[in-house]
Figure (cartoon, rainbow, N blue to C red):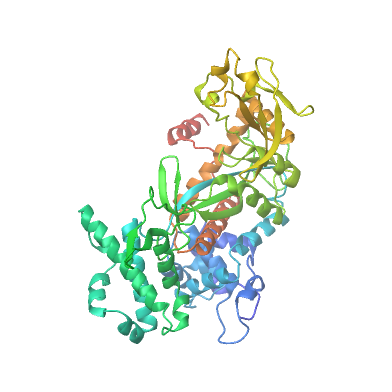
Length: 574
């Protein structure tokens, strides 16, 4: 690939596209070309392409095709069809009307190259850089973040199906790679009958005994196949086949092998109560997507990923806004997505707060105030976000979860006075603590404060304070700065002013909904975390361009969830 400037739009294409548009507003693709020009230059993607061989299609224009593909929620074939027959797309790409475009497989190869060279976020970076130059996004101000679940592009399998399908997938890979060796290693007719069809294509036995026997059969076959692959006579490279490695991990996670006293090997399925199972963050759920994990959020459970969108936001027009509008703006600037983060479904939101700030810092787009729901903050993050990034978290802090606080009776932690200077605590009865021990719990710095048994034992209200067998109260607090920030945050979130300000966060749910409706955000198009993240990045770019298109045309998207009846009422009143 040799980087070249995008071609000028041919005159015939200009006349045909503008004639087709008539007096109506130009389509999105045409508006993007007119307003942003060569948005993605070839030079930005040069590291993913070689310099020798048959000339390929412009990667910069392929990036725009992928964005438009997401904006219209098209398949690869559908996108290639639009390149060939859509005048607005030909206009945006600078193509002659009779240019046949490219084969749909080019888009798949393009995505593979981006992932292989770590360029998943390049398109969003380039767009945000242009928008920064135009004054549409900047550091400071307000941003908000929320996440939603993403279902992986694989079938959900229970543990029995996973074991059988992992054996079948390894057999298929070996049959394609070394058919002669496989014919010598296994009984092909017997195994072929058992693993000819996908495990999820037929009904499993309803009898628990038969299911248990089938599970043992899958485990026995899997270990036998691995034994053949790892034998000294087998080619060493067979062990490096992805399907073989997946089978090895699935067997380790779901089976146990023991040797009896008479030397017989016994293979049984792992049971959670007796043998233990790996944590969800490391447990494979499919032999075809090793990055997908099971996750849960409130009443929703899914197998796949989680995506986090961050976007700029502003106060509603009824409130004073200190930020100046661009000189040429006739309407409020659109809210634009500034960051996309994708994780497997087992990663909690709180683990992503700092990585999101790091990504925004890399782009020079850190907000002054960051609006988040209660899943993102911790007491430590409230402090570190200010000290490390200069970002104030506007977010509810989780309440005290001690038994006394949950019961709403007795003396919870807030009833104790903490004196950090004297390193002691005072209980509601006026008694002081006996020990003050800094500690580290689950990687977090804490202070464990203990009252003496001689103090708590005879206390007349001890039952309201503690039911510990040691007959003494112990409380755990954060270091001074974190403790004070946590108490201040909990006090603030009870005020009406804070609650009115925090209402701004709810708007990000509309962005999630727009992503679902326009780009099918909740369903992964591809397999693997890297390609799923690539999908989410191009979805974010598409949503930004849709919002910019509406802004350029003078009618930005609605900022609130106004009902059709309310809109009609406002129209009649006007």
